[in-house]
Image (tube, rainbow, N blue to C red):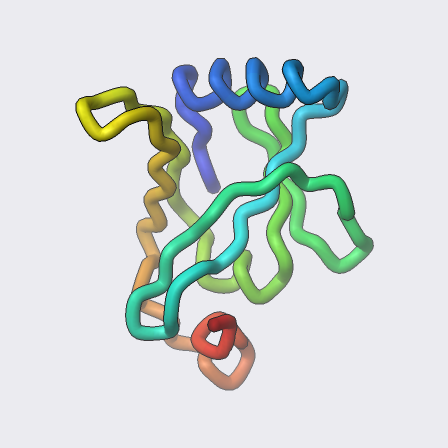
Length: 109
């Protein structure tokens, strides 16, 4: 399960509201290389029948099957510090993909 903290949910709802998006939905995607997998967030405006969809703190979370296969547990938080404002995506399973035959996460560069 992916948990969106109260701070992150409030910031996401605020940003989506500014954009006029009534149904808050975000997509988690992979960025970086297979040796250093990182995750990004985007507005989930193109949801298809193959996407994996879950919900946390009133926000729909959308992932492709490849991303969901390597991201079963984690959190999204929002922090403000001297470097600025950032969403922090933590994946408890990061770097521990054991299903390379069934999962394309390592190829998503």
